[in-house]
Image (cartoon, one colour):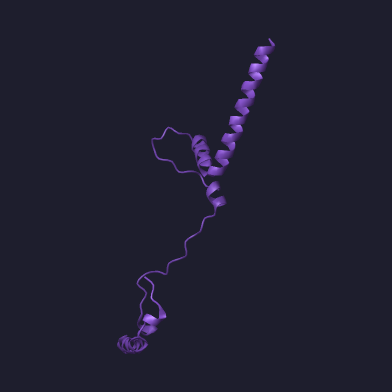
Length: 107
């Protein structure tokens, strides 16, 4: 929802802000007792950190760690890289077929 400046009633807004300031209780810092220990900041892991960590696996999977690493590596590749590789593979197969045909016709 977007509110334009011309839609705001400045007089009512100012009046509302003054009444809420008067109603709001003032909390003194001396009266506050910590109920919980202050939370420490969580660690932010980089991609390199995650690659160095051992992979967690579900108990009972038959997939080895190497296979899981290979699967994850392939999953991370972008679609563009996959399309490029598919084009190169297709071209390599076409050239191989032409070479096989040339060998057969030569013999």
